[in-house]
Length: 601
Image (cartoon, rainbow, N blue to C red; front, side):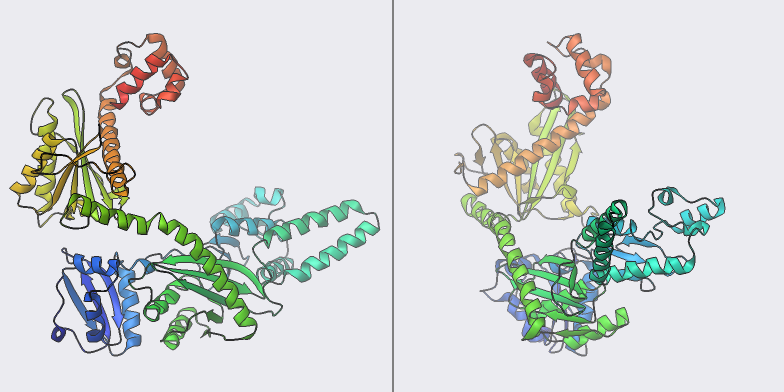
C-alpha cells in the first residue's frame, strides 16, 4: 500500500482499519490524533511486521470518535467482532475455569468457564484440571451437591439419592437427608476455603487430631488426617503471598523485541488462588501505552477482577478502564501502579514471574518466529524471488498407474503449515497416467479460482507468494505455462527429490542450497507435507475400491501372511496405516515391505 495523503486522514481521535484485497480488516488501531499516528506505519525504519502489514494492506478506513477514551472502546469492540489477523494480542477470548456456587434453594458447586453474576465464583484457576481436583478434594469434606438440576429433580421424584451419596461425596439434599441449616454450614465452610481462610479450619483440625491421638483414639485421628490431606491437596495452588488479608490482582508485564509477556497473580486473602499467563504480539512492542489498556480489558472480559488491580506499568485512560470494568462487574475497582510497600513487593513477584516467562518465550522464539522470518528472507535472496514468500503453496501428484489420480495443494504461511488451507484435486480432464498433464490440470484449476472475483473458498481466494512444484523441469514447465497463461505475477519453482535440486523457470542449471540451510528446510518440509497429503487421498480412494479378496492378490505376499495381518489389524483402513516396522514384526521383512509399498506408493 502506498503512503496515504495526509489530507485524507482525519485530524481527530478515532480508529484506523487496514484492509486487504478482499476488503477484510487485517488490523485495527486507535489514536489520539489519526493524522499524527497513521503516517508512522509508512516510515522506512519500521519493524518487519509493520512492513508486511502495509505491503499486504490495500486500503485504510477511519472511524472518528469524540475522544481517545471512546476510540479505545470502539477499537476493542471492532477487534472482538472481526478478529483482524494482525491484532494477535486480542484474539484469545478464552475464559479461565472457576469454581461456582449457584444461587438456588439447594446451591450446587461445580467447575465452569462461563461465569454468571448471580452465582458466587472463585478463581480463576490456571487449568480446568486444577479447579476440578480442588473441588473434588473439598467435596470429600464438605459434601454439597455437584449434580445438574435435571439429575437433582429426577432423584427427588424417585426419592432415592444418587451414587455420590453412597460414596460420601454428597449429603443427599435431593431427598432431604440433610437439613437446610447444616447444608448452609457446609456451603459456608466451602466458601471460606476458597476465600483463602483455610488456615483456621486446618489448625482446628490439627488440634482435634492431636487430642484424639493423645487419647489413643487412632481411628478418629486417622479420619482427620485424611481430611487434612484433602485440604492440603485442595489448596496446593494457594501460596501465601502476604500476611495481609487482601484481595488483589497483580499484573506483571515484560516487553521483549517481538512480543509482550504477562503474568497475572490472583490473590485472595493473602494467598494466590490462581494465575493467568499470556503472550501477545502487538504491532509495536514499544508502544505499550496504546495496547496495555486493551490487554487489561481483554484480561477481565470473562474473568471477574478483585476490587484492586496492580499494574507494573503506568498507562493513559486508566479511569476509562476502571469505569468499563466497574460497569461490567457492578463493583468498585481501582487500577494502580504502587511504588512502595507490600503492594510493590507483590508487583515485583509478578514482574519476576513474567521475566521467567520471557526467558522461556525467547528460547522458543529463537527457533520459531525469528528463525522462520530469517529463513523466508533467505529463501527470497537465494532464489531471487520477487517478494518474501510469506504464503507458499506446494503441489504434488499421486496415482497408482492410471487409477486413483489425485493432486494435493498444501499451504504454509509464515513458515508454518496451515492444514485448514489444504485442498485436494481429483484428475478429470483426461484418462491414463501422465504426471505432467496432471500437474498442468491442478495448477490450471487453482489459478482459475484465484482470478474468480466471486470465489468463496478462503484458501483459493488468497494469492500465493510462491508456488512449489514437487518435480523437475517437466512439471515446472507445465505449471509455469499456466501461470503465464493467466498473467499472474507469482514465482514458481520445482524441487527434485533425488539431489534436492531446485529449478527456476528459464534457467538450465539447477540451484543446490546448503544441506543445513533453513531455507531448504522450509521447502523440504512443505514438499514432504504435499507428498503426504496426496498419498493420504490416494490411499482413501484405493481403500474405497478394495475388498478382502483384492488384498490377497498382492504379488509376492502369501495368503498366510495376509491372514496374520488382517487378524491383527481387523480392517483394511487400519492395515493401510501400519508402518513397515510394525508389519515386519508380524511377517517376513520382504513381505512386510510389499504390503507397506502397496498402500503407500
